[in-house]
Amino acid sequence: MKLQNFHVEIADWSREDQRNALLDLRETVFMQEQGVPEQRERDGLDVDCWHVLARDDCGQPVGCGRLTPMHKIGRMAVLPDWRGQGVGVALLRELVTRARALGWPEVALDAQVSAIGFYERAGFVAHGEEFEDAGMPHRAMRLLLSAADDRPETPLPDTGALPAGTGAEVAGARLQLLGDARHRLAIRLPVLVSESYASIEELDELRRIATSGRSALIRILLHDPDGALRNDHRLIALAQRLPSSIQIRVPVDEVDLGWASACLLNDVGGYLFLPEADRPQGRAARSNRASAVPLQQHFDEVWDRSERASMLQTLDI
Image (cartoon, rainbow, N blue to C red; front, top):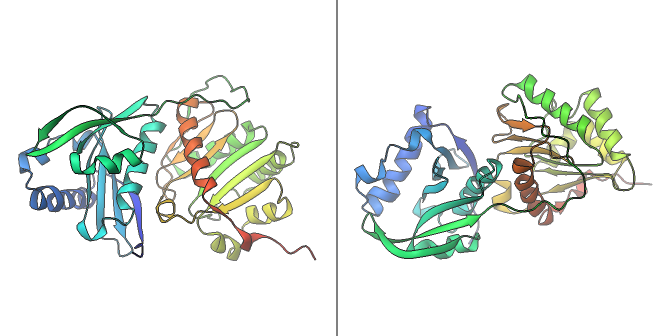
């Protein structure tokens, strides 16, 4: 079956259009298809939850999910025509990544018995007895998120959060994290825009890191390398001059390409995470391993299954 194109975005419950998109999806899947009573589906928790929404190429909602303050994933719904296309996997990954970024030791969910295999493939483990919810058999499941960080670098003392709620604050956080870095960086960008990683100060720091010694390595995951090349971005030019220490790969997995988030991770526990790469609203800290480690783990997983951006290589002739 040919995979259809979609992307996952963060949904803002306070916005009427996004709230209606979530509710319409859930009504179709839970209330109409599965017969869940409205009073059971509308539980009053949504205003305090973190929501994700999958849309097709035309912007039509095709799937959703949420993360509750009780550390649970729920309301996972995908329209029938989109099942088996990777939408559920993409939604689940986004929710788990968010839980990891929040520093939760584990995340739980109540799975319909028919969906247990889906969650087991993502690492969830069922526990306890089967129970009935909304007339359907369920089992409780959980995923442990805590993991030891075995990187040899000694982290900076915890210096707290950096502001990252405006374009200027995001740029300032980015420059601070580049300045703190010693030898290694991990950068994920769906699109490399002209305002990012292009200032003289940023390029100086990137050059310093890339030439800092034998262990120097800057890894960049870029969804649209052709666009960056067409725009003659300065970071691409720097990478072409220092190809051994600045490596660029392109995700090829449909699920990975559907992610809309961006991140910057350095080797002293600092991170910048933007849930939506094109919106300057995110989280950042100079040293916060609880948030940085799971982001790094996910970056490494995507890096390993991505391909070298051969179109960005220069011909040495």
